[in-house]
Length: 286
Ligand SMILES: Nc1ncnc2c1ncn2[C@@H]1O[C@H](COP(=O)(O)OP(=O)(O)OP(=O)(O)O)[C@@H](O)[C@H]1O
Image 1 (tube, rainbow, N blue to C red):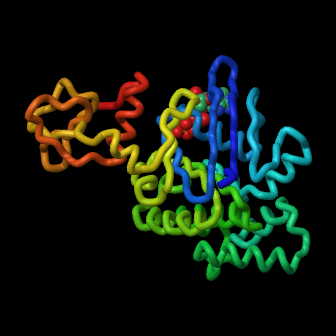
Image 2: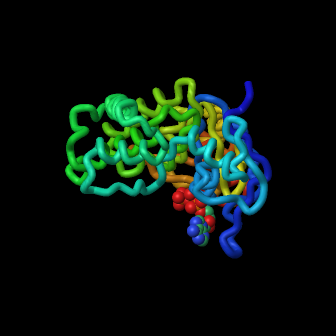
Image 3: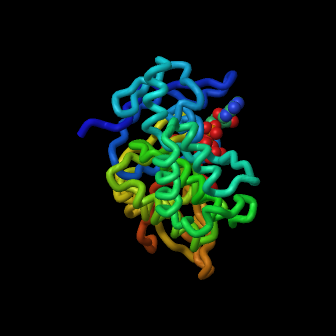
């Protein structure tokens, strides 16, 4: 299958900080999760792919379009939906007005067709009933769905979502996950998140970034498998563990190289993630 997004040698510096360092990437339809510690370069990568900031070096294409020319950039933007980390709402706008405004920016010029499209995406995210309500009167979960509707307007082939579930309560997060899963049917979605459950529940594929590069690229099951046989329970904190924490039941859960006879526990995706980070010398929080 031809990748929707293909990137090679993407690098970006902020002064002396190497935010992106020779990133190689192929993205195909479905939801790909992007995990990584604070400062790993996730937002920078998303901003580059969304053409919000140009890379210093390297190149990428979206559906065959190269954003290094003005024409190519315009084509990439036509096929792109972007939900940034802090969506810039005008709180006085209604949900409809905001999404309509984004649709105008996306060059949907025919007013009737555009309004039909705005109603469609607002229905899709479950906000059809409140489309006339001002954004400042909406809950955090609803606002985030307005931002998703704006990203979906025009039915883009590539959707970039930067930590969309942050700050949502568990019910809203679950609802948002369902929307992302639906958005990923037949469409390429890149989802940056700190929630390993988002990845375990939603993603066909997962990338782990640290220090500006991609350190792991595989399925969620493969990331979990990294921790198989490397998680154990103990009654005291195990000083030999790479990470360990007291669980709700009072026992300790340890990740690393278990001692002989350890009481092994089932690995999760989060354990695999911690071990990938540790393997590159980043250390993991204990
Ligand atoms: N506008 C900027 N000016 C200077 N440095 C920046 C800028 N944006 C990001 N950086 C730096 O680039 C590096 C990568 O940051 P980035 O925001 O991409 O990481 P992240 O993985 O998205 O982190 P988080 O999970 O905290 O959002 C960090 O060292 C950060 O401090």
